[in-house]
Length: 316
Figure 1 (cartoon, helix red, strand yellow):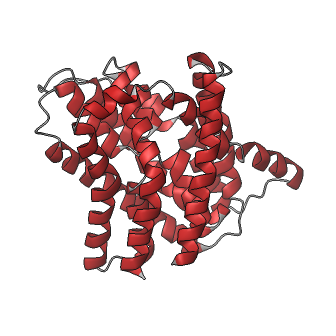
Figure 2 (figure 1 turned 135 degrees about the vertical axis):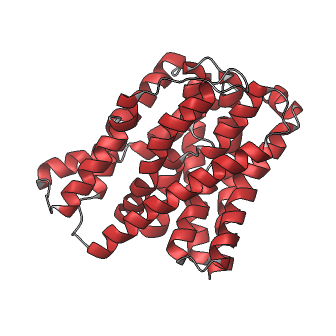
């Protein structure tokens, strides 16, 4: 237990220091809105997909494939339950725009930017990304369906939404995930020289992600954010309440510890940057969404190790 705590705490601190590099780069105008968006596109479309493909270059193991399939199912159940819980817990928020931003921030976590690094520390690089990919596959489907539906709503009334079908099934992460799984199942190995290049570019994902988040944090007006008492309720629900509830329910139902471990840990991740991107795309409250992403990321530096300690205390 103490070993994982130490490793994750050390990794979170390392990522936080890289985040500060992003803050500094933004402060001295090396980064701005335009370059941050380009870095984000580079990460989502190139480095992360290559990282995913490289992680599947391991010997085929039917037990691993079964674990991955069950993690996909766990992810689906968790996302659906959290969507219902978020609707219930934030129903008292009167402002509809604010309410749906809180709901989005609660449902869609930063699995790729922070979840993958934490999983790679606990399970090893290849296996951690392997598990993360299966968990993320339902996330990608859900965010481009229910997420788009929710963020595009302009009122309490039901609305017709044209879902971006291309982004649901043809986004870079989904394509690389399917390609990686097929190569794993069919035992297709990438030549060493090419694999080395794929891994080197893929390894840029984690530091690049933190630099992007650091740049985004610089846009937050902290006095305004912390003056709103609702942010503290959101942070408590997102970073502590949901992962602990998931952990306790999983333990009581005797769900295999691996799936409870991953599910609770992924719920402890802060809000995903995609929430802010969708808010801007669908003309919602993008500033509030960005603030929630940034603030939850900062607080997660403390809460992720705390949740991990609780997880290992309960699961042994």
